[in-house]
Length: 395
Image (tube, rainbow, N blue to C red; front, side, top):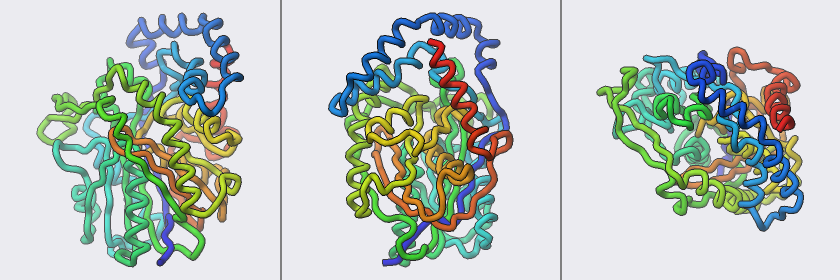
């Protein structure tokens, strides 16, 4: 069987940056809630003391302790997020990422055999963005959509690898895009912790021993019902027909993540390591599903690894759903945290869908540039995360 890996990787984040002052100025009650949060020292310190007594058998308690410093913060550790402007669409964002991935790969669109798209959420009800992206690229190959909620980007990557490994395609373009700013109403608390973004990569044949080495996925059926989708009017006129997909959380959303994220992470990691025939000590770097400010730290604790072996893009972008994986992978490589020949483990959790982990050996991947305004040096990039940690230390 052929080996398949990432030939090029590019990410696009919207130009509009929305920091916490946007809500503080627009909604004074949020600023007041933030001030109350700063004063709750005893509660946070009590949770921190508890953390030292937690073992790996109590994932939910570990989750609680890791989350505790952010619990009463109305921004839950978010500092900045990128959002699309009215009139911009999921397709336009994905298209920019796709064109950049093709450009840095230095191949013409005619050499791409297949396009796989995952959008959260598409620009119209009932059908995804794959054919619409393909049409704009003036590309003649096949195109289809994949849906695995926040695990969709990684699921699409592995699907593309399977096409290349089997010899059914030479080059597969994968695009994943998130548009939470349209799917979540501004007054919804979730809007303060989410953003928009896109990533694209071209999967091609890789030399033996590089690229995808093994993976493990598990359905997340026990989370079904913790999130929902509704049709709603789109007042920005960005979607076809003026009707958008609206993401709805429930009282069970955080509980579903709390009780299942750790066990899924452990089982998927163990399965992917076994499939790749490597040990966790062999993994140089980890890409985790950083949908909250504390999930990178929590994931490192669950797997009992040094947190320096991962990256947390959350302070810069908030939760960007399936785009987390390509953005984190791209930034880790651009910042020098991930080097040629390193083994990297990727993990994403998709509610109402599947959790999946994959082991890859990093090859000669061509990278698009860092987004505008984002430093390309590790120390400077970490400064925003350190600001978040400083706030945590104050409480």
